[in-house]
Length: 614
Image (cartoon, rainbow, N blue to C red; front, top):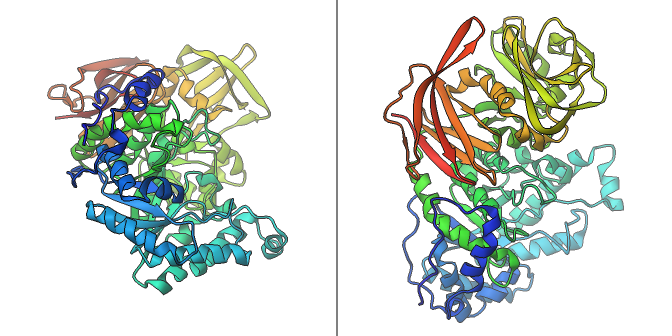
């Protein structure tokens, strides 16, 4: 077998604009015989991560049907050090069993685990009231169950059907209630039960898609379906956040694993990501993998072989991927202690401000999703997702009465009109929107600082009375200032309210002093806060480790602030030995001074570091 192309330098990921050149050098100009290489002997696996590759039914035909194809394919994907492959079957023909058995046996002989896979689709989403669609689904899984001990279900389990039968079956229910019940019932009968009738011990794994806000509307119900299935895979699939039609912030991939995977407990099997339509976006693809590693996913599934293999244009992300594999494994082995974050209330089945948990994470607020109401923490974040909890108003009030803090989005507070907490702010007017590039950041008492954004930003218009004075951050115009971040003591606790920009992505574009003011509210909860620009995520682990990930195209000067008295000696950056500047700093806050320990550093574009305190 010819040697593999040299991997990209892993220490400093290349900016996105250079990836086209990387592809030309590393993928289009593959060495002679690369795609015809002999299959490697079973090689070493990664020490700390487990990797798997999904083959669609078309991939199976193109890349695995013949022994020589399998050898070449395994050689091409050898740098991933795969532990497992998933083989999709789109046939109901019993004759397909023999071919799948042959392929699976050969792959197992190469040291791979092999599972089956099914894409529940019939040239589009299935109708769960259509007998032909149900027969198709059942026939496919019956074939798979004759070959495999495990079957993973691709995220086409959803439905969007509005045929007469579906309309009649819905009755007076919402589409969300009807479809989530229908899909759970029919997939149990025609998928899970059908497979177990063939092989009682077969394990059936559900893969949840990344479009969480549309889950129940299209038939997914995590609370209902996780108990039905034997395992759970959770989609990351943030792809190119600014160009894909889903526009999912990268940090959401981490939250999905913590939220849905954490709820699944021992059933959580894997994170699932893909490079579909990601030509030229290797940094964004690598960012997906980092989210899986940081979430400590038990397995990372790459979808799919055909997308990562020439001549598919999106395969240009493959060299950056396998060039970074040693770094993924190295970080996974260094992480110590549980992931920490700010409790954010995300009941299962909730719908709220689109991926707000991801946007908050992208400005350095680490998220710790809680499906149950977080009652004991010093502070916690509540969004419109919390409205899924029927006791929300009473629970929030109880938190404040007990002397704790609640951090609400303005959208949630506006919806709590019947709640006592709605009276925490004296709102004069809240109609329409307002735009400006000037902000006022309150420091202490009457002292405040004007700061400028790079361009005007638009917010929902919140005009407040002078007293009680609650504006920690305000958007300023000639005629008035308008609330952006508001804090009000109430009963024995405190109510904080964040007015999100009209375009959620603009949260990352807020001036640094504005972001620092928001982050400072969680200092007591976390014992650490980020200082610097947006687009940098913070992942604390245990009491000693802090991962910082710059997801910007440009460099970022950032710092961690810790309580005064924290060590100033013995800090280290363990990924690249990046230079750190550690010192005691102080800020004048009116009549008093705040002292903190600062750990400052400069991050390159798409650079990830691991800081460890002594």
